[in-house]
Image 1 (tube, rainbow, N blue to C red):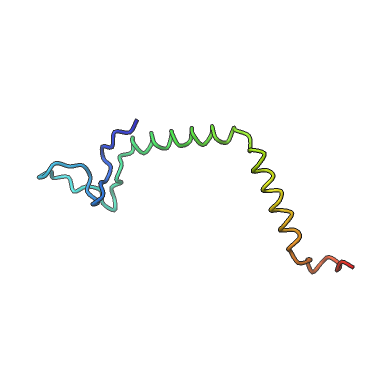
Image 2: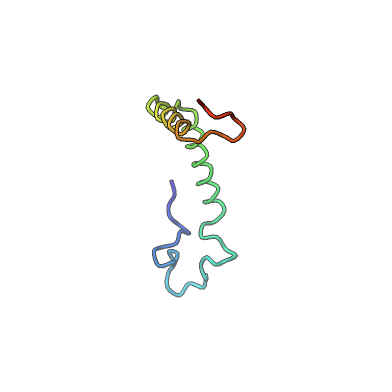
Length: 85
């Protein structure tokens, strides 16, 4: 799990002891070190991949179909198609 080291606090200050010479994250220095960013990225990719393997719930598929029907009914006819009689 993430231990919070290197993360910025609410005041924009990382968890530092007073008198520390480290200037903290700046424009050229990320708020999290590369190893922490890599771990977070790996966990997010794994979670996303797992989510994408799950089927779409029937209720969502029904809602999408209904939205598409409503959009087709509300859309004006395209200029290249003949007007309906």
